[in-house]
Length: 409
Image (cartoon, rainbow, N blue to C red; front, side, top):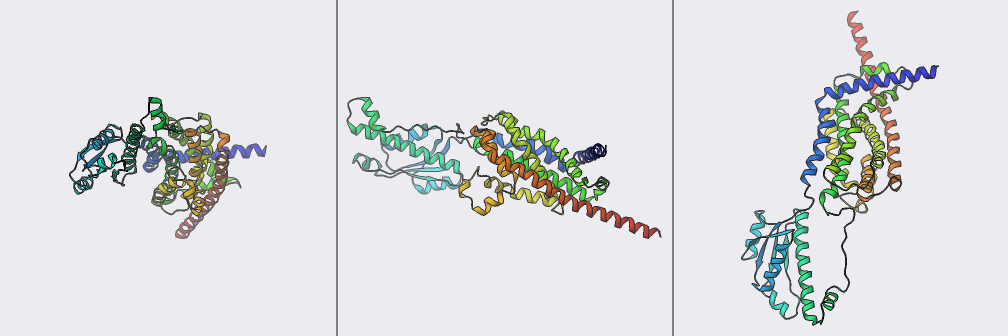
């Protein structure tokens, strides 16, 4: 009977802490912002910004010193492409550079005076491409368009000089080895489908840690740890404190996690190759690991603002270290080791492989196991830091009571 009584008391303790933590969450404006407003608004904002997926109609200026039919044909073909728009013609490179400096164009196509003559003499001609490298997507559009047009025009010239008898011979001479370019995992080749799945997973961890840190900071600043002290009636009191608070956060982020990983990709038509139960299987240990990680971090900083500064500072490095926006093989071993500390590193990898590449849970079983390992380790660490926090609050309470007794005497 004592086992059932302890279990019943433990359940009551967990429910009591859950109720107190839930009240504190909904009475703290900062926590409400990070738990509800940011996870809802940020994904919509980012997804709308990158909704076009790829950049088109990049303005380019042409400096044509050749004034030949061949150079004009090159310009017309570039202008007909979806990625480039011929916006200006300049007399020389200095005028074209001034247009770039005023951000009116993003690139320059320069044709030397001997461009047509070299082609007619069966010599290699050159088209110089100058790109504004401040935006990589614009550079890619300007450079690749010129490259594709030059290849197509070179193929036409080669076919014309081949003097073949049939169109079939012309086609073989133009493309002896035909290559079919089929983009996989990102059919549109868009930036949103490439980067946003990882950002959505990272938002879940960062907002959760920020909200927990603000809540713990408010409790610490107002000396409100006193209500936790009676819970430590038994040896298992610490785990009840941790589980009670974690249950509050888990209930909130069960909804927010589904919104971030399932609803937002569906709204904006990002790749969705994973079954929803596989996503939930990854989401559950990831959310628990992030909760216990946030509880550990929240007790290791003194002021609530410090959590905000810390987590906002590491957001961009964490995205790079996941291997989504930068190749994992190019990241130094030291920083790869640092990335293993954060649950988001493995959750991003698992989510991208499942939702964008069609992997199953068995294909990401390593990341799945590591997330559960993070859950266990950070649960133990959160118990430890809360043990110190509650003991400190208990000692402060005893000292205040003794001071009051002395004052009364």
